[in-house]
Length: 328
Image (cartoon, rainbow, N blue to C red; front, side, top):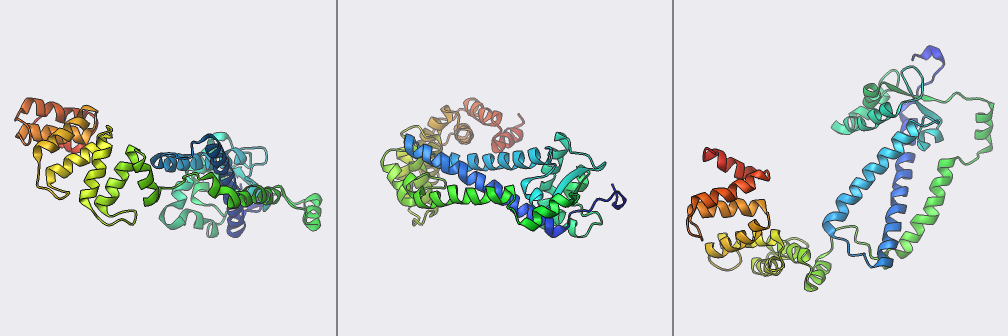
């Protein structure tokens, strides 16, 4: 495609406005989804979602939402996202035709490269002759203005609201305002609980909260002062419920003499063994090394190597390196 075919390429600022509109639309959709989830959680009593899983789930959902929004609209009949349509742009292939699903995907995912190195790939739009970003060059696409006709001019003169504008206004009224008024009542935990919330959950017997509280006391997080003795006490509560990370950390504390007492290798081996039997790779490696060396447990090189091999089979790098050094 060249300038001779009557196409006018979409400039940097026009495309920036389109991107802002699309970003706003996608994030309002996300707010709507999270608000709906909050309502459902509050009504069903599932509001105490594990803090370690909601973050990754929300991130994955946002990636999928962005992917579907940009690829489906760009490869659709209108050849543009709602944001681009609002500013009179569309995306075409090198022959001026509508993008295929594959090319729309290539354009979307190559934006990761455009965003790298201080957004240089996007800034290229301002300096290339055909207003191409790095993702346009990779996918062999162009962003062009729609041909203006009498109907388009009349639409502008009447000042009629476009679909994107209506969409944003409606979502703002129907989603943002209610969420500001009622989200506190729903009590959806979209972030890591505070120290007081974690302590409350730990007192109720939640092993993950007990483990998190132990780590907070051990490392001085959540606004708490470092207190290794309390850390060990909370680790013990979680460990007694079979929480393997707590069993492993408790073994480390006994093995290194952390928490207000001298080193106790036998106690360390005991907690490592509990976690190792449950498949905890780091505990298997630690127990294996201690068993080989006879630290806190009778020496048994063969049994120790078996534990290390189990850890290595799970991809534990230190265990793999240990076996390599042992010539295995």
